[in-house]
Image 1: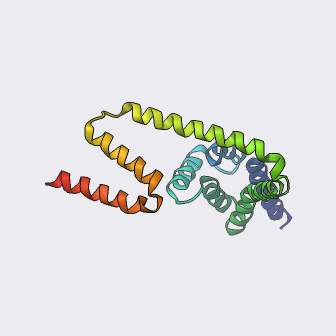
Image 2: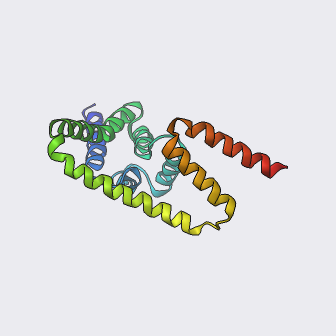
Image 3: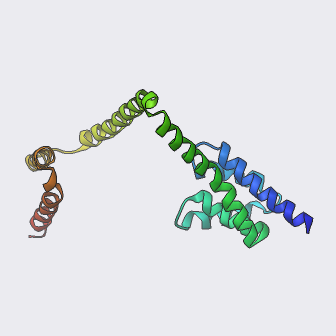
Length: 174
């Protein structure tokens, strides 16, 4: 029985450490899971688990924890693996929320910089999309009307958007 508990602790620590130290989200964790659990399953079994985890709804890290935990130790493996993969990001979110609330004035320049970089990224994507468009009079008129509605009639954005979509749809089917 002691061996079983040690296996549960091993599952928990492998998922906990991987989740805590991996940057880049769930897909960055996949090769680490493959290496850490190679003594429990071969490459073919891991490939099947990965395929199933990708087809399931939800974050891939949680899906991998569920499937690997079940493969290694059954229902208790699922519980320990999921807690192992969830605890680090939850702690980081709680810590970040606490620090932001406590030091919001000191962190204001950091958030302004983050805001500026995100704005730059969005504008860069917008520029590349606009550049690839083939512009005609109708697109320019629709864009101009949309900008006017957004700036001057904020409460009318959704009804006007629905009207434009309906108008374009009616124009195309007739």
